[in-house]
Length: 84
Length: 254
Length: 134
Image (cartoon, rainbow over all chains, first blue to last red; front, side):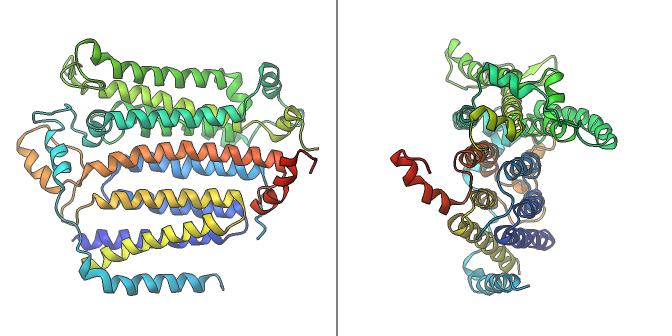
């Protein structure tokens, strides 16, 4: 029965991999912040699967809420597009 | 679509490598002896913290000094960001004035929803922090949930609405200082009766009027809750000052 | 099957760490470097939590369900290791405070230099150090 949990965990981790890849390559920084928030949601569900309810409570508030707001502040105070 | 080719290569490499290293990397099924010690001792047992929540009892009792110094790192990081944005009294008054083109935040729907949700967030964060010794949660989790509430008000109304109702940067800093001072005092209390720094049992009472409070854990959780929430709120109040005002104050740019 | 999925999870996390290290090292924008740094920190935290997990069924979080001694032995048989979780909680919150400090410094750099591109900042730095106007 543990296979189901492990498969969900694998899917979530792969989702985190895909969205962090997209966030790193994206030129528009606001879109990159959005991709990074999706990665944070995937990781918070993964932490729930890993039986860490304490960390989930802290991680959801920080990585999805505060951290995204902080980056939106930073992008609005500096430049929006990355020049490579 | 050209972006996706390296991604597919990475995924194929992962699964290919996993096929080879899987026999050499058996999944862990046993507990480590240290973890077993904590699980057995947190409520029952000789070295008890009188808390059914093992993570919180490790955080503030068994590994208390570690968390104490992590809190000092938190203190230094917040103080560092406040120092970079330092303002004197006259500039602070300038930053509190509404600019002329200020329109009043988002629409009525968002504002009404925010009013309800902020109250709910405050209640939930206090519940997370104060039940931290019984259920999953604690000071760090409750404090970071508390910091979301002022952030929502800043987004839906403005930072001026928050300051008009009495929560400005100084008040947030006072809240944070009360929290940090409380943690330091609770850590030093056992020295008065001949214990060690951050000792929990048997110096603090485990139950008050039949309610399980787990000794010092509830005090640490309460003060850490105030410290984390107040610290993040102070930083976000400074970050919400419009960039135009700052350029005027610093005298840079156009 | 279980061993294969377990190995894939660990390898996927290591690949995410590699990608975020690429972002920290090779992207010129400071805000992008900050995003990559937080992805790096989150992935490292997840790897630490993975160290304490037990691949058994049923598995339970490290919170005592009942306050009775009879339930304790069954609890110890199913619960995961609590120590990595306790270390990660402080790491998540304190890492956030350090990220706030970095973000504030990025904003201050933008005010002083007018750009967040490290290459341009590097070009302007010698002129500033000599005391002349840029």
